[in-house]
Length: 293
Length: 297
Image 1 (tube, one colour):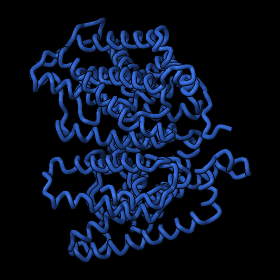
Image 2 (image 1 turned 180 degrees about the vertical axis):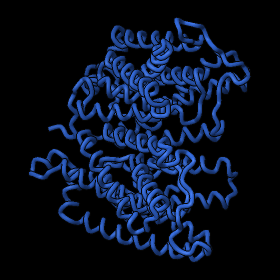
Image 3 (image 1 turned 45 degrees about the vertical axis):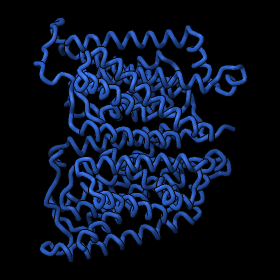
Image 4 (image 1 turned 90 degrees about the horizontal axis):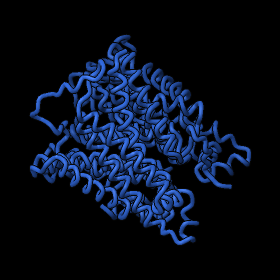
């Protein structure tokens, strides 16, 4: 086994970690699966592509604009749709179905404007071989993926644990009604959560698109691996996400190494299902009930 | 005329698909996104059996139903341990696994190339008569399935399922076997999904994995939600609506390259609009959902 597989695992791991982190942030505060986050991820990459190629901006500037636009998309979902549903005391299930609907709408909007074909940021540059690192190769982009992901992970965890807003976010996740009683505006906190999560998601989207390529549906597949990592890691702790993402990345690359790369998608889900036999409620083991007695 | 027949046949497929999903999801309120996977298993079973072994349609349909039942049993033993959101993610995972197997097991399913030359059921030369007979066959199945589901949903078993949807723990506390009832309804739903799969393969005489993707599952789910959970007539009306609606776009003169996207976009908007306007969300079975959409649209 070459060193290359370790490099590949760490790249996949860092991408999954960021997606799982952003998704987890929304999930712990609002308690529903924000599937439309997939479109936020795709939109981040596509807006960056638009600004870099059609407006001729510098790549970094395009990234900033792309992430900003993606944040607007995320906040748009929250303010226009989820907020109204939460006010009506809608169940997590109907929120999930709504977000599936939003995802269909947004994904097809991308398809209409950019086409269904595969796009890539660098179309005319020659393929980079990368830097030799032990007996594997790694490109500058891949190194930056790992570094940026780790910085974002540590930054977010620090923010959640140390700052006042971060603590409020965790408080709202624990009990939003009690927070309102104590004078923490839970709606405002959820707004901030969507802001941060969309920024993280869009960044992850740009990084993945930069490493490989993008299609309108790539955010959805990518997000689902993040969700699998989150469920395996267990909900409620940021540390669990590291285990989850690492586990999924390792198993996927092992499957690719031992069998074929075409089985990578199926392995992640097989892992999830096998995992649920052993521990139906994830690593953290919190039992979920349909009805509170 | 032939085209109209074709549309009716497609409506029959989607009616079967959405009603069989509705029997499970509509009553127990557990939403499954693996429907297109079972649809695909049905189609591939009949394609492989009729091409490699030359078996007739009636035997294929029984084998496909049995196979779907067995697979559903194995799957449900695992996924019924989870609830709500986790359940959806699990069924989604199963959908992806089934799709991967169909797409990648080259020797059996021919991979992304698909299987062609599946024997047509009636007159191969005359496609008009073929379509008429096919429509009769499909309507026969729709009638049988519809009556059966109606009967089942009004039976004692159907009442247990409705009770599970309302309050799972209460149902368990009055001595009903919630776990077993969920498994049985999931299996019935999967078995019935084999029927449109088999019909699909014989009707188009060509299948490939792209017809059985996660998008298709979400599409079937949106038919069920547009029609109203637990409402079989609603599913039928919604199937008519989603099949005939693109024809309106065609009449308007939408360019072909974006027509498919615009169509899906509109379904997404309808899906969001329905859950948004129904104040209790999709949790509440509503017979008036469809009349409400006709007001929106």
